[in-house]
Length: 196
Image (cartoon, rainbow, N blue to C red):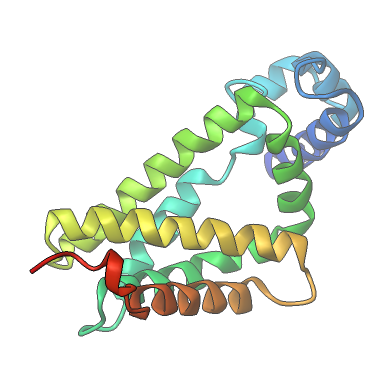
């Protein structure tokens, strides 16, 4: 039996990952997760409201880290540069949890109910980042666009990091934001330019 709440939580997460990989998310019960972790099912529900949330634990910490990093970014930066600073700081959370992050993303990718939950998480975090930009004085329309674009770049970098662990998440983030700059600096071909 785990001795501390943190240890029980960690064991429940590990057990859930193992079972989801072995049997699939839909075929795994909370009772099986608890048994594998060496706790009872009541302990499971003290830590998680349902079996989906085992994979989404830490969302509040990530939101707080992103909001704090947006607020603490140096003055004078453009919105996307503020977000790059924020994502680089928050990305450390993912890097520290790589053994959990990698299989978690694989399980989410093959489970429709989890993809839906992941989209809801992304929308919530995107809105939090947009609000952080608004608090820095960025206009509402631009804050929303920057947050959505920045989140897409962050998500792209995180997937690239999972696919190519030879580079750090930070390196992938820098590349993704460099690619955004390249895309926005590219001149439109003559036929695609708006008429003046």
